[in-house]
Length: 428
Image 1 (tube, rainbow, N blue to C red):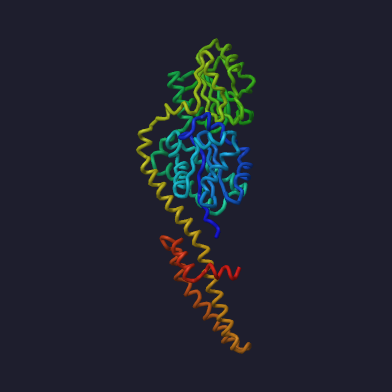
Image 2 (cartoon, rainbow, N blue to C red; image 1 turned 45 degrees about the horizontal axis):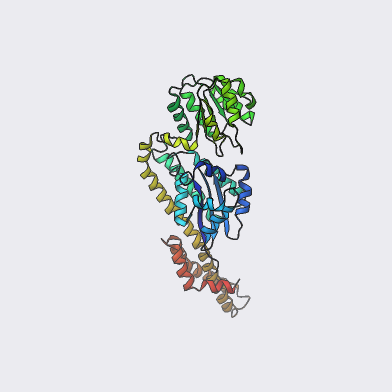
């Protein structure tokens, strides 16, 4: 008998691993498809969704066998990242069934985020699910779970105060700027990268009456668009030297695989600035800025993990909303369970219908053999009677199964009562 599939979540996050570990397992968007194709082998791992962000890299999968969690944990530990397996095992976790589903629901709701209640992860999860669908790596059960996880993500933001006072890593970055520099009015800022985090950070900086704003990106069109949105100036990366004397803050968040700024580059820029204080906030994973830059005179460097000290913005108010959010998670877990159980009982319903219809047809054929072929009225009446009785007989068990609080158990009882497994095997 084929062992049942389990829902498994494996990975690591900011709660279990420091930045220097997380950046080694980060999977860029361009590689997600290849990773899914290799990991979802259809033998043990039947379906999967891969989420890789600055704070977590996790695989949500349907896997077969009693040792499914260990198998998935080990498979994901060997590849596609560069972390040694023993290091991976030290920081990674594996969750199964309800525990794994609750974890995914909490991730979608921002309850597992570094900044409690942040909303960006919901969009990232939507994109991860869409990517897995495009690769054909989502089966109906995983679809029920992953799509179901999006509901609490939306509900938490619409039904609790976590959504009414939104915060994000970008909010923490601007708070760090204020903590280090004080009043930001008139300060010059350079933003490297034109993604969502930098867009939010620039909007918040503008609210603080920031001075000159420059935007640079690998894609000049994106830099132009973002600069236009905030009244800034697009800038070629190679021309940073031309404006560096007017810059007090650099916020960098790109998808580059290597450092965008090394110590030599920053030393050169600081020479132009006569070693005046320069605040650099690196929001990227992997990091955009070489950690050695922190030793350059006048430079204050902070990475994404350093922002946890200012992640307490409105924290008590957000914590007060946590019970309501946890209640939503519990409701949605029950809803997902019911959907999975209903799907799990569907084969029993289909097998029962086939079993009864085969018995009906066999008995009807036996009785019709004694009726003259030209007695169409009698033959038609007997057929209608047989079909009507079959429908009435099936109505009760099928409705009971579909409305049962435990359809899997009731399906098992029906299967035993009508010997469905043997019947299906004999007609395979």
